[in-house]
Length: 582
Image 1 (tube, one colour):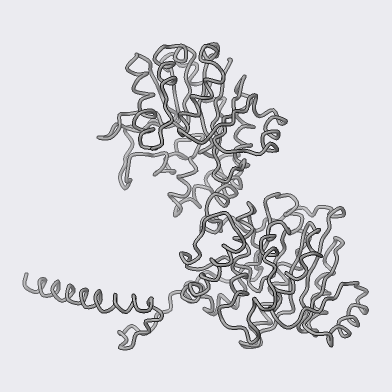
Image 2 (cartoon, rainbow, N blue to C red):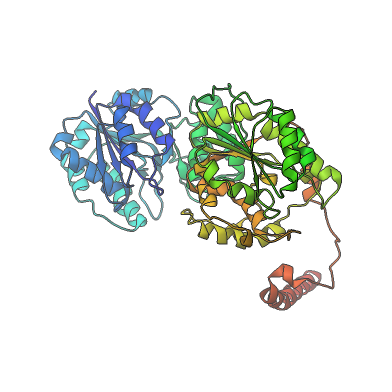
């Protein structure tokens, strides 16, 4: 069979997602010719990758106008409408889906061997008061007989560059099916949803609102939008895909992490760092930065560093010259060379790391740690925190760096939540909200391109204590701020400082550069009932006569309290009186 694929690509960040490469790799064998039409301005490197791997035959770069239908029109124009008829079939698809989850060769053989099928697709949409019944346009395949018809060619040559997506649906997506059926052509779909039960669905669009039906009916593609739209059940959808297909679910996690916030709950469920075979890092440059404020803890870290099987350069920062001699003695006893830099007692461990900008920039992988104690809380707070972080990020460093080498877009690895923060509610939504304005301000100053409002977050996925492994490029924007001593409050550090903001920003800075993150698991098991107990503790159940309006939005909050509170009370009283009168 001589088949043509017209593939439309769009990425709002002008990137080539890894799920697109996978998709083309598995679709390519089915087609004689693949035309890749991009509505995004792809780099020459991305285009060459597609061409060098023989994933496409022709690349068409166009302006992002007219949505997919105008792009398919331009693809047909590029091929030539007379040439289209030389193919046994023409397939239109785009990159708005993950897949194929299952073998597409079998699907083509089934429909191409069916005399009752002239054109086909993945799913259809039943007739409603707004739309006629039609095949949904994310995947459409037409036989040569249809492609050579006047109705087909006229339809596509009349496509205009409309700017309203509803106009596209009304005039183009629905009309493809309607026009061809009225001309006497017949269609089928992999999953005919016309008679499916729609109980509980907002609209009878199964491709968007019902991913369960898509998986159960073995539709080879699942739409990107349906992942975000059904987050409460997506963990189970991903499990089902993983159990019953060969599709690498990490492609879904990777893409969704890049095009939206990287820390949705269903994504976090897949962000644990997986075990991997240790790779040789002999050709890689690794730097370890250790801020030593408490010299008595230096030996603990040097002992932990002995687990490293790779070579590394050690950079030690400390707050005063008096400690340098003590540090040098301990280093000599361990036969460990290091570069020691005195950075002053400001900025805790974060500013000293940033002051090493010129030294760290040339390294492939960088580890950042510090001699953590807790002066604000009980001894066990800092003790447990530090030891668990060392267990999660320092001792397993060989596997962490191997995984970062294997996964090109993995830019930062953080530790899981230390147990102290699961037994004690220290990080809470109200206080996190107070840090958000500083985070937004830093985001703007760093020139980050992705849109995000940290004030809309309840809490943040952060590296507790800023212990991290990272690629310099992932956090380059932070280093380029060139923060100085005057930008950081002096000790004792206030509760919501720029340092607390940076601690919470790290994975999002990497995300802005197109990098994903992973979490090194805490080996100490705690039942989730601990979290449930902590997060659901009830305060005083009786109403309080004193209200702190600083916690309720200041003057606006007070005005709402004066107006809305009494109104709700009156409404409640009237409702109860009405119930008694019945």
